[in-house]
View 1 (cartoon, rainbow, N blue to C red):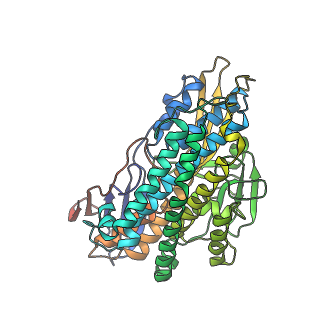
View 2: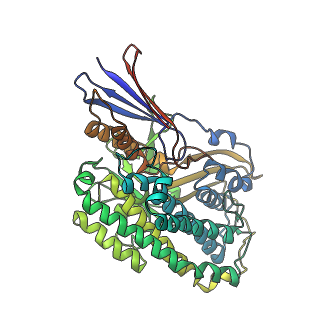
View 3: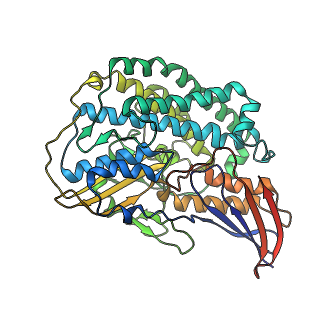
Length: 474
């Protein structure tokens, strides 16, 4: 008789989700599902608000990457009102975004994914958490905390607040950077670059010892999408969107304003989260991945020296072809963190970064605007339709995690089929299924995040709903 295992909640992610695993009589997995079981409704309750309010409202979508929503919203408002920010304002926005990338990526590798990698997927859940990392390697844990602190302080220095900023406004920003602030950021940059490099060495060492596991852990083909520079370099703040197929061949290169011509969304009745796909290939042939793995498969180079050196080594793993291994999201994430840190230096050394020409007030109303940015978790779209009085008529948001919805579901099913074997279901088996979700660093809610470990109850029931077994954790 088929059993159904439920994992709820999935831990060490942003937001709330559950996983159900259907186990056949012989103990093998028939299918596993990732359910996004929360509904926010931002697109609906923002209708009627003024467009200049949106950069203040939408950061509440996420407590971990509010800067990404803040900046995507400001860019959409710029486009709808027809106002181009002065160059110094764009530099300051990008600088704040690099702080967001550093703090989010750093926290994910060391505090959220780190317990699995550094302590082991089968480690006792009582210690397989951030506290366990501190106990196992206090010096590394302190470096990790300081890395996130650096990113957070950079955001605060540039924009005035660490979370839910009110810095970017239509047409620019509302605060210039001082010489003292610039020099303070620069003074702390080298030590944090050293931490990022240490993280890279840790991951590469772990990967060398666990090559077989990486090769069998949710490895599958898909398309990929991300922003790129004019030369197809890695881009996180502003650029055209590039889509490539599973071989790395270009499918599309288009401005953000044309995203609806290229992206459609599929709906399944077991999840509140839609499934985006490449429109011309249809569902499900047109599925794609975003985020660190997607971006490093989409770009052809990185235009900062240290990250480029790592990128060359990274792409050699598959002879220059797209990397399909889900666990290499972590590797790609660290390379992007290094890129962001190098970008901080280049931005701070730009003469315009200290300019007070930070706001353009000359609007040329367009009525519709799209803002796109590479959030830590992937490509983020804000699309606003605006009345002449500045009131939002309707809006469309495709969040980064939404773009990865299919990939997360595929990873969950793949890992469950590989590692979950009945009748005795161990905690380590289930943790691997959770780790398939965590690799994507999903962001599912607006303002909550679990630090360390949340409690989990796994119930095994038959198809008639009878409780057969219960495994508790936390």
